Structures are given as C-alpha cells and as structure tokens.
Image (cartoon, rainbow, N blue to C red; front, top):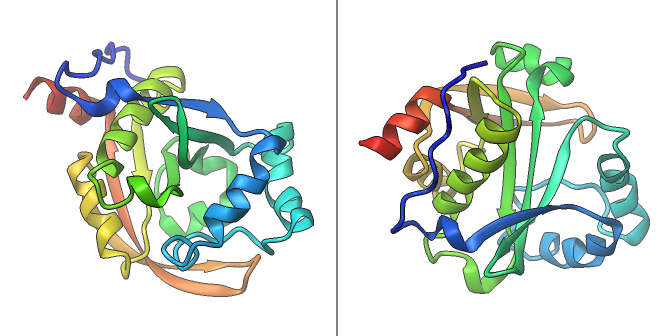
Length: 198
C-alpha cells in the first residue's frame, strides 16, 4: 500500500456534491426499481428482481457475510445510484480469469436515477468514490473496473475518470452461466494523485 496522501478534490469539481452511504435493506425497493430500468438492466446482473431475489443477492453484502461493500451514491444528498467495491483476491474464480494481482480493488456501479444519467456524473462519482473509499479508506495500490466491451458509454466515462484500457478478457459468470467480453481498465493510486496535480 502506498503511503501517499490522497489530496482533497479540486475546488471546481462536482465531487463536493457526491457522498456515499452503506447499502441497507431499506434501499432494496429503490434498487429493484433502478435495476428494472432498461437503461440499467442490460449491464448489471442482480438475480431475480423480486423482494426475495433482491434480498438473496444483496443481503449478504448488507450483513457483512460477503466481502463486497455496497453503497448508495448520493448527489446533493439524494439517492442517485449504486456502487460496490471488492478486493479481487476475495473472488478467486473471477481473479483467475482476469489474471491481475490479488490486491487490486475493483468497482462496479450504475446511476439509477434517469435525471442524472447522460449529464456527466459518471466520472466525478468514480473520482469521488476512489478518493474517499478505494484509495482513501481502503488504501488500495491499484484500482480496476471491468465494463462490458459493448458498453461504450461506460468505457468513455471510465476513461474520463482516469482509468486506462488494459486489455479485453472473456469472463464466465458461474451464477448465471453467461459469458461476456469485459474491458480491464486500471488506475493506480499514483496516477490518480498525478491527475489531480496535472
């Protein structure tokens, strides 16, 4: 882990309007609505969109029985989407397919509220999350994010957040028995700090 201090967000950044709070069961009905949106559903797998299915998928994260940490994204203190993070070494099947170091910290997210989509929020949300959580609280050395190669909008937003294209890998999800080509995109703690200074 790097000892470099993570600087505060730039004064002109939207990051000041973004915060995160841990996911709770009280959020699951809102999550179910978001995940049923056709702009979100093709890119984010969460099991059956029933109350029981949502609890089965997110309950272990909420209860701490699974190492993935889930958060509600807040913009101006209003729920806007979902973001989760995990250390790749805690998911050996996925790690083996990606061929990355086990201490790499990965993130998945979606903006659930239609009013905030396509308005340039993706990159500042990621910057804020990595500043506060991934490089901040978790002290990660390298971060990754793996969008589907078909999700051009996500790839572009992640580039704006500072992630660079590493390579494409075919990934099999044993829970759904689905296979997809994912883009491995990486961002080091050092590069994150340099981007702020640059």
